[in-house]
Amino acid sequence: MNDLKQTIATLRSSFIQALEQVGTLQELEHVRIAFLGRQGQLASIMSCMKNLSLEEKKLCGPLLNELKQTSEQLFNVKKEALEQQNRQQELKKKQFFDVTAYRAEPFKGGLHLYSHIIQELEDIFISMGYQVVDGPEIETSFYNFEALNIPQDHPARDMQDTFWLTLPGYLMRTQTSNVQIRTLEKQRPPVAIISAGRVYRNEATDASHDFMFTQLECLVVDKTISLSNLLGTTQTFLQRVFGNEKLKIRARPGYFPFVEPGIEIDASCLFCTDGCSICKRTTWIELLGAGLVHPNVLRACGVDPQEFSGFAFGMGIERLAMLKHGITDIRLFHGNSLSFLRQF
Ligand code: DAH
Image 1 (cartoon, rainbow, N blue to C red):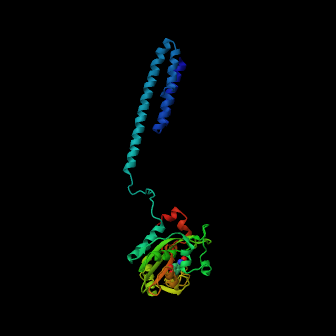
Image 2 (tube, helix red, strand yellow; image 1 turned 45 degrees about the horizontal axis):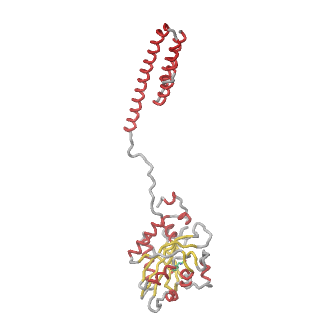
């Protein structure tokens, strides 16, 4: 009997102690289950009652009832206090809600750098009255070489290491100049087109060479086209791409089988006036291959070179974008690094 009284007293004090240590509603729930739950300590003492004599029951019954009531009261008081504490914490959070705080932006997709630069180039040429055309990347050797005045055993074929396909006579185009032929075959002069697209070269890669890159091709054919049209057009276009009206160009002789005369066009360095590492201390940056369309090319397309003349140029689009955005490795363009791509 005294044992039971003692057990009731111990249970009361250990319940009170456990309540004092509780700091959260979750902890409180654990304490409730352990003491007041259906299989808790209080219930197990209650179940001992049936073994007691009537006398003992009369004595212990009220003690146990009292313990049950007070523990439930204490539990409710604690619960209310913890709920109040939670409400206050929530309120505090709301009070000091910082509307300017940084929140990570969910990542939105965007156009690839290629699309940006190609659209920019196309806008410039469309505003000058040009037509934008497209050409195939899988090409026959006729359009990539022969019609461009590069016969089979011509040493110029070595200038562009070619990926030949297993299908005889087919290759991955090494230059966008194939579009010149495909256009002149379909369209009679006057013709003024540009075409941007991928080209492929079987070459080792490094920071400035890749086995796959993009070129911009331009072709103009009409009755009185001369080198001055070519120079005027390239200067205007480069000034607009680089947003620099002071940009100058210079022409040097260059050899490309499909133009005569062939020239290479350099732009005045965008980064210095007296030589820097980008222009290799020359103050000029090599950008385009160009020239007046070779009579053999016109003839191959059924255009009479006595009546018509034309200019053409080709350039690497990556090189342009690299200069414009300060990119130092061409392989980044299709490396799929999101940290690179997200910058544009
Ligand atoms: N197709 C040449 C190349 O890939 C670039 C080029 C040079 C294009 C002169 C032209 C041109 O249209 O007239 O190296």
